[in-house]
Length: 450
Image (cartoon, rainbow, N blue to C red; front, side, top):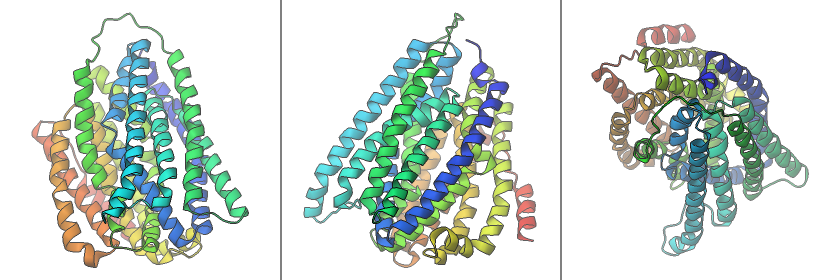
């Protein structure tokens, strides 16, 4: 098979499909967030935020790097037309993922009462343990197929159809609940699980169709052995663990130790809104598409200059569109939150504005992560991540009593600054140039401020 799946023409087709799909997905996401804030009480919405944060943390900390095995090597197998090897790799990764998540769900369900009796209660509410376990297993299996496999195979149109189907399902369920007596956190978690189950079936059908289209290529090539796969998995997992310890979801769980459910509900709402902004910046809109294309092109040509060009283009276009959003949020943030939450979380407008500034650092880190994987310098990435981890206990111990919800903001900024700086230094030490572009960033920021 040729390199058509990762060619410029196919990338452009995927971008068109992606942008078309993102319009309804954006509307569905915003509608769900607004309706959930109106349907659930502040305390119940806070409980729902805790469960979803726990789901994300467990999904992230139990990947064992399996997602990056698909993202890194599925393009290699597809380029060389090795359908059988690709099917075996996807099947093994999906089976391992579901088995691990099932075991973790059972352990959490069994250990919860014992820990509570010993005075060490989990942040997960006891009455939501069952819905949590169900959602965990279904969502984890679905993401391996939808987010990792379909992206790696450059099947963006099918991925967008699955996303839209999931959004419609969960929003329709929430709308029904709001019209028939309201809802509690458990209802919303079960609605998420049902939507994920439908997405799992659709993703399975989409992957099967994509595999059927793979054509054999007789050109000689060396298949990656299990040691290569294991190395990529473990290095990405090591850095991913640190990333999840600094993720908003894990920090919310720490915050739950000393803040009320209502305060966590406000923070969770603002973080979800910030995440929507990040996902719909132009650079991030095509990030999933260009990520697989960047890796596939670098695998074929080994041209670091082209890889760097794509990465810095993504960062520049994302930041230039983020800056006016920052300006709007700083001026009209209170009104935006009042409209989105029916006035419930309008007082968190300053938190909202500062988190939008954090997005600039977050975007840089996401793009650098792809570069480090492509050039196989994950050891340096892991070292930087581990060094940043030393700061988190200091922030928690020193600031939890007086920072309040701002503890999350301080931790997020500290992590991104440390990892980003160390990553740039690591590239430069190895002769791989990387320009942050501080001058044009300063000029653009000054124009936005004016």
